[in-house]
Image (tube, rainbow, N blue to C red):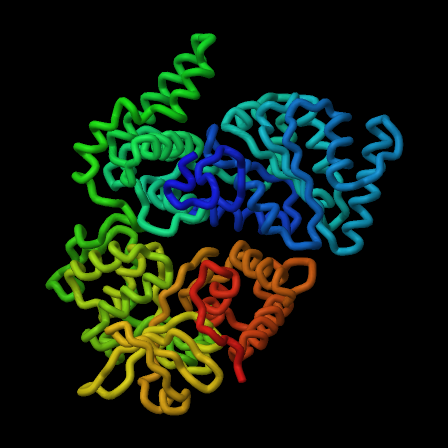
Length: 578
């Protein structure tokens, strides 16, 4: 009902486990990476534990979408199956013909399929949702399935997804063998306050919200206080609050509307517990007429609270000057840029073949002239869909020099973005990376900051601090700029951007799966930085026009983030090298 009023294409807070709406917080990234690593490295039995409503099913569906094509998968949603029914359901979901009706015959069919799949280099994974409700007999059958293996690998990868009661159940004596076989355990926690704010905006953006977020900051704080970061509760409150705003024709959702939505939910819950016959009518009231009692509060309090339209708390409330004597406090969420990084030839686990991603000793911290820098930052943030009013207001109030390295990184982090400096780069590399870049032309006396918006053939498309667009031949620009560039980007996969970051098995598996989906790697997926993985890196680098050294450095990471970001990443018009 309220979708058209707020210019939405879809309902943003439905309770179905749609993986499109999954907010990839740091915790979600870690769990997805760990489970992907467990699957691709044939760890066998894994467990995903989370409280009611934390998004386990949504995360499992997102995991299935991340699996490479050579992985066969089955998602069992019904926990109330007998041991025989469980095996039969797995066969059906995997598309395996049932050969008989007894458990022995079904197990034989499954074993033969797993052996054949393993011989072809394929992986088979089964996810069992609501596992805490499974019977002891069915869980014992899971233990038996986990024993299907060869001398070198597990034939079936199994993920038990359930509430904390699952762990209590596994402590029973008759299930101790199953408990001991679980090699990986992941714990899905509620969202933090900051991630709750991000979650609400993320869902509304995915649903098509074109402008400012209607929830005020105070309203968001009340939502978190009530929901305690549980996504299902957040969805219910936000849905009711949006309906209330629609009914009251209010474009802004203030704490009064949220309070009314919560009261409605609590009343409905009490009605259900009492088993009242009028519960359905109460629900209809909540969806259609909840705003009637709070219209006055909307009119009185609506203008008092400011919009919450960004990804993080406004940075102008966080005093920090990088040049202040003894300054040691940074904005929450800000990522400090180190004073030095490995030189181009210095060995490093990641990026040893590429210059570091931060200024080195002896380099000027003034990577860009301060004149016009704030205006260019606003333009970059708008390319990343940061609200216009928010970017204007926050950057205008930022109390430090936006051209200094630590400050630029902090500003980017305030919007859940990253800022990476390429101290020695070329236009060919920027074309290959494919992301807009902040750059400087001229010497120290006549320095000028510009934004590289696109490359069309042999011409660069630049934006000036005043917002004007100018075109210049690439050879002229190459001769005029200082070969340093700042890239603002969104690290949606927690890709390695630090040249000194270790390539852990989880990181390798995550990167390898990306390369496999892009057609640069064939099964099986490696979990170590071996020759097969480095060959995949080289193929990706050649495909994008980067130097094919086989090393995951800042340039490779930036290019990969642009490719996997798809339509959510701003790109240079022409990213193919000539």
